[in-house]
Image (cartoon, rainbow, N blue to C red; front, side, top):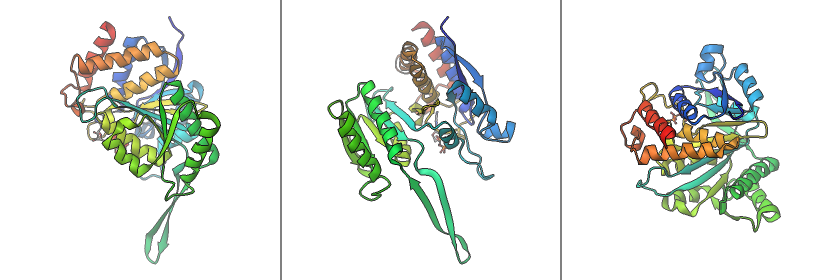
Length: 343
Ligand code: ATP
């Protein structure tokens, strides 16, 4: 038997437990090497421990440095900060890798194969926001501070270039808004251009595009892009956009990667509108599990999982409602497990 790899498992909220069960069934059928330490966070954490990010969950990730996580809801009110943002900060998960690939051919966009690399710790996401009261209006003015550092830009840009080269990609596109936010996103573009000259010229192509034009080009001709790297907020928006090119949020996995840990998840949220109804598409989390297998060097298991997903969708034609099918989460999982076992 292969070496066991300790990993933290957080089922999460809403559809989280349903898609995590589906993913565990697939990983069991594959004989994946993970030894799970199950922890709670999000609303489940508030219920169990009075904290959306209990110390036990943090300690577990500190120990395993590896986690698979369902979506976490941030309770509104009560002064809670987003658990997802806290996790990224706690473990300095500076890179958010969000690949999308067409798995169901014949949709509006075919043969999509793109990667969005999102800076995960800086920009307008740092939460330095406040209101200014004027007369009797406490919310008369709203202000937010964004911070991008040279070091943070270098870190994420190096990650994007190295990842693109290691995975045989042809081009890295720098997405910015340096024409308007000349300092905040100008530093990102400037750092990219310097880094490219110093380290990457001749090894891979690079170009730059303004974020609004990028959004339009992604819808008109997404095939012109390959790897997109951008600052935090733009990355958040563009990764949902590219998920839409391949059938929606149910198809988009994400990896949060830092020097101290890596946390794998679906891009989507807890989808409370369909939670508990057996309707959720587990593919985003299954693809996140495939990325996790690749992260620990088990490429052959990841390839088997990807192939089984492809055959379940396209040979067996078993699909959940968001993909136009009629299968429940459980029926899809059963078909997938059969494909993993029988090829
Ligand atoms: P958040 O703010 O946490 O991102 P949200 O409710 O804005 O949460 P999602 O939870 O991602 O966004 O859901 C957006 C829409 O996509 C919902 O209508 C939801 O039902 C649908 N959706 C999200 N994930 C899935 C999935 N895995 N399978 C099917 N539908 C999904």
